[in-house]
Length: 206
Image (tube, rainbow, N blue to C red; front, side, top):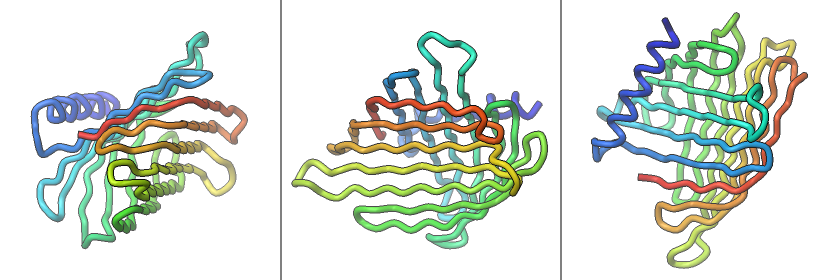
């Protein structure tokens, strides 16, 4: 049931992104040595306090159908001020449906942004979840910026690593178009299974 609700909300986000001008939409493709991946971020703010967003990520190997990675998260957020918010989310990821509650700190300036969230996720038991996002875009000239983005998610029961995600992007940004080098690292169940993908990425923001 939770999986059906999550997928339904994702389709609603996709419809909003295609029609509403006030919805932020950032799709990205990665062509790597191991796999081809697609991910996007869709966001909408109702007012200064309430907002919703959707993150979807799909990764498929070229010649191995068993290593398919999927992640869909639909989140509702309430902001206390410009730095602190609380989030409630539902979604699906390897190996199934999940629900998450987190508190989040964020800070942004002209050329960099930082976000850190901590809370609990339930998926076949409760785990501690931490998410870190670092974004740095210094200007190189009047039209081009350097682009550095680090995204890290760690789920642990304080004894073992249940799930880990690290994504690094290094490239160039011109207006709303970004391209460069991509590194994706994934760990599953005690880090006994790990997947790596190195390649190039193309990203556009709307």
